[in-house]
Amino acid sequence: MEPLKCTDGTVFSEKGRLYTVSRNPGMRVYGERLLTISGTEYREWSPDRSKLSAYITCGGTAFPFTRSSHVLYLGAASGTTSSHVSDIVRNGKVYCVEFSPRSFRDLVKTAERRDNMNPILGDATDPEEYGFLIDKVDIVYSDVAQKNQADILANNMERFNARYGMVCIKARSEDVTAEPKTVFEEARKRLLNRGCRILDMRSLEPYEGAHAIIVAERPRTVYCIVMKDDRFLMVHNLKRKGWEMPGGKVENDETTEQAAVRECLEESGYEAALIDKKNIGYCDVCVCLLGKKISKGEMESELFETLPDNLAFDTDEYENVIEWARCCIRQ
Ligand code: SAM
Image (cartoon, rainbow, N blue to C red; front, side):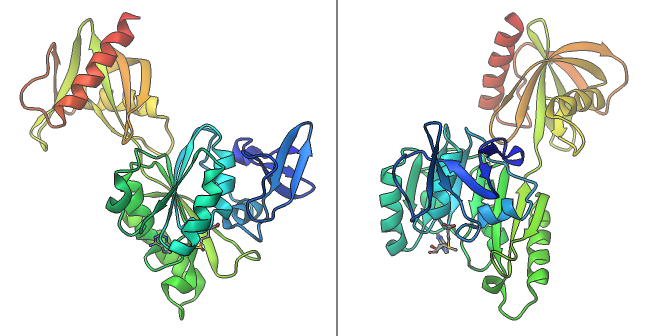
């Protein structure tokens, strides 16, 4: 049994078949084959039964799931694929949304034996309906086989601050008369228009005719708390008419940390040395030490001991991250 590199070792392969490590040994979810090797039970994951397995089998290059991912799964049906996702995200959670009461009854039975699976009877086109049940998620996986599949994905990614999204596009659900390739291309463009970056788009032939999976990422942003002793650096944004921490978009070819340091230099003219980083959901925040001023910078900059009155962004969030930054530099 070999862990598959492209899945960060969360999915396994033996003799050309895919497997996940069962979260609930001894139990089949949909009649799948079980295999025990050295005391570990694996569940076969056939590309004929699951589009996510077909995506990997077809050479999919973008697999955002990790052992600790929190996943929102739209269109879970009775839980075939979502049970494998529950195996994969061993230390995470899967929120499974399904709107058919018949399928939902089976889904509940599957979830009863899997403590990281949370079934939700709801309509994926209206995320507010189930918003109160879900905190932030890392990934939205959508397989709802209905119209506007790209927008349903994008709306849920935005609502739950997900960085990644995977959508199964069933061409016939969008337009029965159109060429599948045209439908896939339109969905790809729609996700680009919604501000996503496309990581992969792949037909699921020969396992699922006229289906493709698109993997998308919402652009990351970062800002930094640049400290000099107990004071922090802010820049004055003329467009937003207020003070803010230096920051911006993470470009394709850079890490979040590199983007934080670059944005600080561009906006304030100051070099910054990275100390720590954390993910606050919709963006990352870096703590840095103030370096030399080496250029004028695009904006007016100033060191503050307390937050000024006219801020461009949320006061509570800034207060929390400044407190965290002060703790980081004292350590
Ligand atoms: N993802 C499942 C799997 O691989 O095990 C199969 C999903 S099946 C293709 C599509 C499911 O989406 C159906 O069970 C259908 O009831 C559900 N569905 C369709 N539209 C939906 C919506 N707006 N909200 C929630 N579920 C929806």
